[in-house]
Image (cartoon, rainbow, N blue to C red):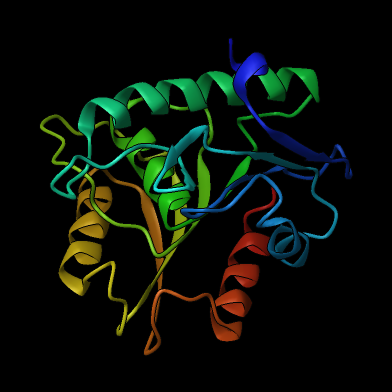
Length: 206
């Protein structure tokens, strides 16, 4: 079960404010994004769930194949595992998933976007730092009740502009409400990026 396998971080906050779910990047853990979450919404309760796969010594939410591509079977099953864990700990800590704002970076942002396109999660809002397309989705869901903020760096060696744009176009075609922030740096999260994300979160806390 999820609560037997997950490494979880919880920080209490104002129960009347939207909780933040933190999904880390490759090699991260359940507390990695806590300072960023506190900056984005100081009063929000925080829930962090660590990816429980290890690849080349680094934690991840899903694996690669031997040739470096995405392992789509792993992606599918691990996304199911993550959503089960979110259900388990949201219930344990009395967090409303309908109001939850996901804050995901890189690997964590990728799995959040994939969940929307393939799994119908309960969360409807997200801040996605440097997400990318993982696989083509043949039948798009209706994401007209989904709002997200997403960022990309022009010098990002991991996420190409073409890949990022494809993901944004896919989400737009599914009728998600999208705000995009682009900068000239790499795969890093920078201060102007955080300022933009904070403004978006502040406007979407209710």
